[in-house]
Image (cartoon, rainbow, N blue to C red):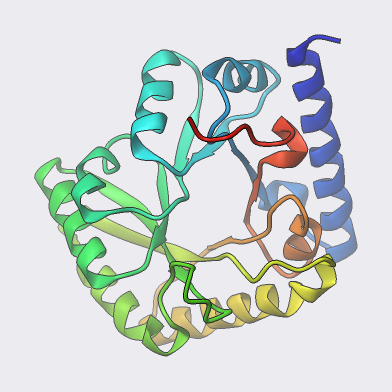
Length: 238
């Protein structure tokens, strides 16, 4: 079996599991989008999956992502930025990605907005919340979420700047998917409370990865970020 065939078979299996999770939750399958996490994997893998109908791909490193985008010009791909982002690289994100999942500070939000306004672009963003209060992980503390969200909402200037679409989380690593479920449920609750507080719809919840995406779907995820189940083990960064 060719590499392309392997990738497409794995993709089909992930999508089958997504549909089953949606059925268990009483949700329409089209209410959840699969973001294939392609960091460290070659552009040829992305092209093979795009040929099988996968459209959304997630990258965590700006320079790697830009190189792949340049190599895949003309492909029907939506690029998501899912990793931690330094303010100095914000200029490379505003016009190259359909959604930034990991806004976690006022400094980053203001720099993204400045760049987007200069480019006359409205950049959809999610706020990343550090629900596990893990020092090694990015994300705004839950206690500071409302304040940051108010700043992000204020950075929409006449249709340019930032468009807050919802929340993202990366819960602690567990051996069993069920242990992550309370974090997914809590992010949904935070999203609903924040939407009411701001008085605007926040339709997106980016949560769930290879080991726990079914639980995330059952708790309301609209975007799941799956890499290993599709691409296989990640090669070392290099």
